[in-house]
Image (tube, rainbow, N blue to C red; front, side, top):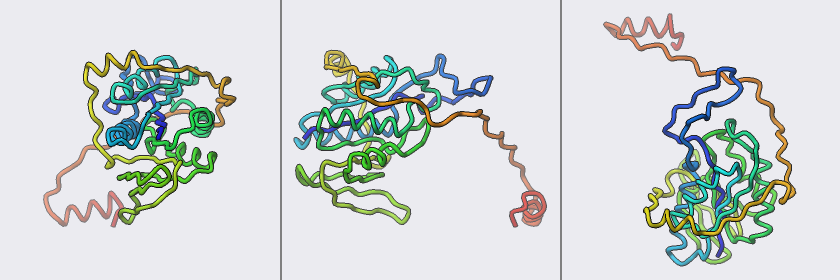
Length: 255
């Protein structure tokens, strides 16, 4: 079975985001970039399935500038076999290419690659859209299982997915091919060993443009401005329960 894994280059989750002085976007100069954490989980799950002999080939896809090759090579160092970069100059400070265009791009690649399964992060940490997986499943007409916390491949045509819902856990049986989006509880991504990082540089990577795939990346949304969240005021201590109730009632207006 071939598995397709979309990966995205985002600001590292440990970096404190700063807004540009003109409030037109996010400051990216000299900012550390890395693979979207949810996508790391998707790559790890595909590699584990390959180690079990269920998956035969892992193909990773990224949409972005030349620098996006870094996240593809990272996935290859972990265990992916091939990479595909769809080059675009769409600014990445506000999430990059919009979810619908990403889904259309992935459809074009799926039509070429014919994978038996697509595993992807449930969302990216830059725009938090949580839309691409659902849109891709709808465009492809495939079953979908979102927020997966456990994936069991029964055969080439069937899988069981446990997903997180408000009330607890829900287990679905879905037919393959399908689209799965993964959640944090699915696994703990491994670190790439240095020898594998060196080997990843020799693995094949194809490059396409949006025009090659027949996809329009023109934005449908327009950013008006960005604002920093309000600074939280410092906490205070009160001398008694009565003083606390008085402040909650008269100042905080919560009771």
